[in-house]
Length: 440
Image (cartoon, rainbow, N blue to C red; front, side, top):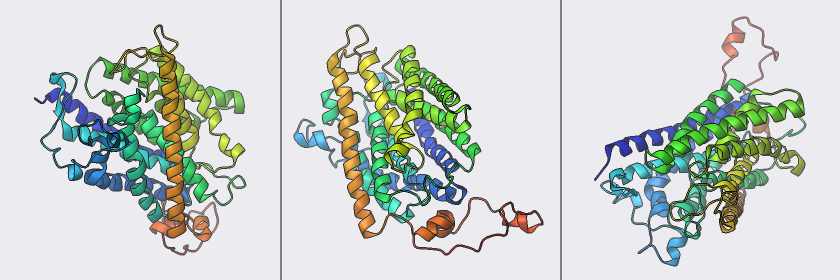
């Protein structure tokens, strides 16, 4: 039996999570330089295309199908192939804990698809301004196939990490740590932007950044509350905890900026909000509101300092994917081992700061980020190197200087030529000749 209320709830949450990827495109696009904004946004939008195709053909089956009776070794590593092309999904039912909460399996598949899409898109922020578009498309397909789909199976699809008891309510490990580790690997493979640390590379449009973070914040309620897979009390808890942690993290980041730099910035409040959203994701349905505030505080302060690690360690993570998503995801995942107050679905495990808490759960919450982070980093580095050695991952230097928008897509984000032609002087002097188009 299908419950219409649960089905409607899950359809709305699915749409909200899908909206997050265009929101990410605005967020990332505003943070890049003007000559790269379209390419940055295109990397998010093409993720929707390629991951959708891969998911329908085999991705859902690899992530959520069972091999045999689900108890064998192979099932711990990857799903089966019974759902290739979504065969067998159309008329199937996702059986909830309560028979009154059942909804179509196709809705569950669509909901999980949106998670796969944004995970791939998140990685692109680390390689802004300098990656070949075609190489990014190839990387997206391969990475989703050999990293995201298996990791989703390990944690959510009946695989070995989930069987051990590792908990991730909505994707702190599967999405953010996974993407953050891959982003670090690609940043190392591709190398630094020309002029990094010597030339100003400030965000070109902070209004786009704020628009993007607003869409992300809005869509994240579907991301977190929807992961309960039912419109119930736990979904309400996840919803409120998402709001609390995000607001506290944004405020904490602003305070850090004010004390450290003498002023709070719009980029800071946007980055702090995303850090809070990331950190509360794995814990939102398991902790009390006071704990959500604590997680937000830790994320806001911790990530505000973590984004500076790239200057100390010498890697060019263009849009701070590592400092926000990897670090924020680790904060949230590990925090569960301390402050989880509500029983998980399969037991009574709680954080060690809660009466009755178990030290073993803290160990598991550390194991998950370590295993997924290392796996994602190593495989992402191998994929990136293979692409770089064959088709090349980085655009030529002259194309990077001229701007990847014009040289790859034959477009620019802002057509100011007609304004200057009408008699308004350009602040940059005479227009430069059109850049030479290069192979993407």
